[in-house]
Length: 265
Image 1 (cartoon, helix red, strand yellow):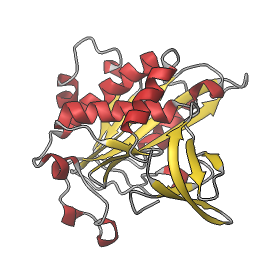
Image 2 (cartoon, one colour):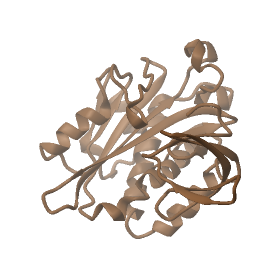
Image 3 (cartoon, helix red, strand yellow):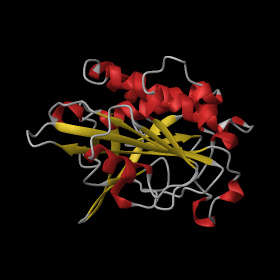
């Protein structure tokens, strides 16, 4: 499978020699973070056909069965203060939409903050993680994504069937998983080149693709939930919510979950 993925990339692709493929792995993010701590270079990419310990945001399990999806993580070495990467998940979301549009022929949307969706079904999930150096700057950033490629609805557990989807279900035909993987890695590479110097362009793209903006939402705080409307995404990637009493809040993904257009957290 690795040779097929490499064959779908340009011969001069800069990360080409640092791509590895595994039939199965615990978690591409976890393994790549360990490699980052050992000095792996920027562009190191792990691609797997399945994961035994896939993770999503807030520590949730990410279902990663064999032979139907693609699970990959890429390593960046930005060497900048963390505040300069507050839009990293936004950038990764736009790159994922670009890759899926190129590989499958339709453009999905983004459910704030990190889910790739189409016609009210979740197709993919993104997990970004960082490590800091002794100087306080970002030593590494890992972008992970799991993509449902060729699942049928009945392939998902019953409790997920109301909102889970795949590229095959959305496109009406099976997709080439090798091409999906290659397009995704190439999109993340292009994203890296723009990350620090085209922040506003990235945020504008994210706002266009974000299906949460303009929707009624319920913001889930530890003390309870509050209903409101998602107005915008600010320059730090926070969701701007106006509550029923007229007050507004800039909601950070690490603090709360948002229910709204899609009936899952």
